[in-house]
Amino acid sequence: MVLAKITDHGLLTDQTVRDRDIDGGFCCSPSEQAGKTYSEELSSGTLIPFKNIVWVERALNESMEITYVEQQDSHFKVRTIVADVTGSQRSNEPGSKCSVSQLMALAYANSEPKKSVIVFVNPHSGKGKAIHLYKHYVKPVLSAARYHVELVKTEYSGHATEYMKYVDIDKYDGVICASGDGIPHEVLNGIYSREDRVKAFQKLFIAQTPCGSGNAMALSCLGTLKPGLATLEIIKGHTVRSDLMLVCSKSSSPRISFLSQTYGIIAEADIGTEWMRFIGKIRFDIGVLINILRRKQFPCRVAVKRITSDKKELSEHYKSQYQQHGVTKPLDEDALKPKYFDGQLFDDDRLPAGWEWLDDNVTQNLSIFYTGKLPYIAKDVDFFPAALPNDGAIDLVLFDGRAQVWRSAHSLLQLDKGLHVWHDHVDHLKVESLKLVPMLEKGRTSYISVDGENFPVETIQVEVLPGVMKTVMNDGRYTDSGFLAHIG
Image (cartoon, rainbow, N blue to C red; front, top):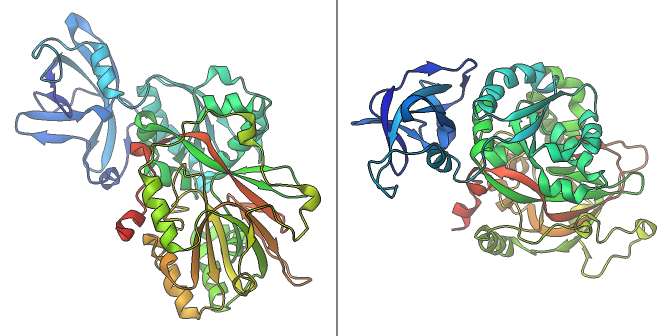
């Protein structure tokens, strides 16, 4: 047993702690925590940050058994110590014994402990490594935090959608997707198909531990691509209500989208290179490069209900909305229905009040059409740097295909810092809703991608659904995209 006391930042022990490892430790990069280390060696002992403490229970003689996450070299371990814990200036009686409930309250200042969750694992995600990643990096942290886990290994495309349509949601607090971006898409559409979908969206949080090739939700919301660290962030992060998007067309039922819709070079590089999946992520880069060199264009018409008209307004919108505390309006059935979709007038040039067609000179020569709600769509791809969780807006980015090859290439090389949106041939708008009308010449084939999934090439209408998804974010915000620093 060791002696420990409460400080402003965590639990200070009287020695370097090496009492007991819990099987199944996990590893992450120490740089993932935004410059903060998980244990800080002090002259008077070792500090265990409150965020790292995942469980506390009573041991013998008023001591406590404390389970926490510790960094050791480049690895993180789930460990347990037995400690005699006293209070400090934080408590009413400095030097008095700290209770289990007091320490748990400090450890879970922004969240609640011991939740019940459904965990979906896609065995085919991440080149077939998802089960290994879950077993060795995700499960140990959930177990240490005393989470009740209902593990579901998906067996076919759409399995998670079918499961979420009929599961008893009263048994669970949330859904964790140990996968790529495909399973969150399925989960959200399963919930949307429920008769009690309002209750389900209000009750269940949806989060991702990155175990696939595309991990946009984990990267944008939790700031990491490490499954173990992402799990800790889910356990300890802030619950946030985030916007979703609703994609409507004449040929299919409305579909929920949490990530993006794309048409043009990006869709061709994503969906059109599926046959090259065996070479890994480089297939996407190859697909983009080939189409840029060919100066390939994808004519279309685009109508929008604007929120911003230019990049100055975009910057002002971001500054004002960044300081907001999020959605407080209660969710109801009307919030889940499309406001502007009319199937009878869908192919008509007439638009709802407040809408407008974008400049045909741009859209008839478009190379990239991309809309989204998350800043990062992949590692080092900060495609929507002005995206905000709950600003009631969809980010729309358009690339003019008439730009010289070197200009297009230069802008795409700045995706890692989100600086591409400041180029003259790139438009970045905030819209409430939009309509995309592909206008490919007869016989030409192409793709539309919704959250990375293939979608029929036809007219689509997309609307924002404000504050529908309950999710978890590190510090209650998206991962820093650099946009605020750029606009000052």
